[in-house]
Length: 522
Image (cartoon, rainbow, N blue to C red):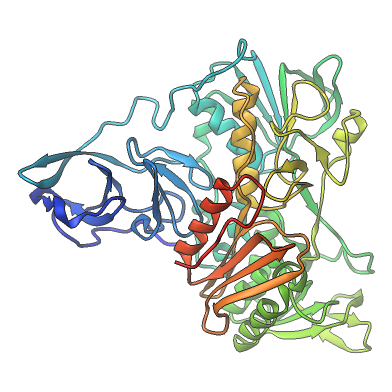
């Protein structure tokens, strides 16, 4: 994550660029005054928008043009070239949009388009029936926030009540184990929207509020404070909770899971005086936390039962690369080992050794919070079962995010995916469907992980595979790793090949779920 860029050079767009410098779908960055502006061609049309993604300021010119949109190479956000609107998470804010003029075979950009009074609000799409008067969202994470934001951007005028057990408004959770924990991102970067966003948009956000029961027949939810909230449509976005180890010492103050702002703040506070940390688990969260603590100069030990980190998700070659990468940065692994107890100063291992520890971070996975859905009588199968429209077995009750198990057309299976961007995009689709849009959720799953200066992108979903192919060089951090089953590409992990990652996503979107989507490196 970086601060907002300034003038990035390139031609002065007020003086024009020759039309013949643009092939179809070509992009070029110039500037208007001090603002970097992207000019893109689509057929005979030219568009101009802000050059940097509103999510983490990724360079849009390094992405791809798809129809009249551009996709960010970093985290696959998508923007309208016509309006600058953020169309797909993880971006929610628009980029600037400019008027283009073609005069004497040159493209000129001089005037910024005015945003509507309600910035970044879309024209509502087709809907069936009357919109609900009251929508209740249970959960203050990625899916819940994205749904509330989308409802208002789609001009929903009814009541929105957002019930969150968290003590903070929705935050950029991936940053809690990355730059924020490493000390490279200030606290003000964490909120997905400032506090005043909720009141200004008529979103009744209630923090520190737990829902204890859902009465599907009465269309009401019970709260832990004794109150009841009625709904016409309900979105369950309760997310997941970190798993805890059945060990003595798990409740000690220096032992933390890493899921919330409170967790990350507590770990960062202890890191100020700590000399040594133990991370339990070689998961994405665990190893991102290890990298962040190493950035603070703390000695880090990782204890995990597997022989190769993340082998189940990424395979042996990528797992061995990640282990070497962390070792190069000083992380000490204790693989094929587990902890048996934790005390005030150390962690005891099954192998008989001990590790001194000022901080212990437990990153051994999460479990979906499905208790509410289960007691309400909703269909459950290792998550909350939903249809292609993200509606549960109860009419008018939707589910999105870490709890939702949906029919994925790309694999032909019901899947549940614990990824941030998936949760956000599901929240957006659920919002539209609560308004009667009847839109299927068929986005291709995507996530990214950051280890020191090495980002890893992953598109698709492969719980198992029978073939793994590597194009490029993993050690050189320039590769495309494909995970296949029965000859079909189910997922692709990449390093240093952002455009190939985007074209993989596009090919999977375009496929009908049958056959190899034909992924090739760019």
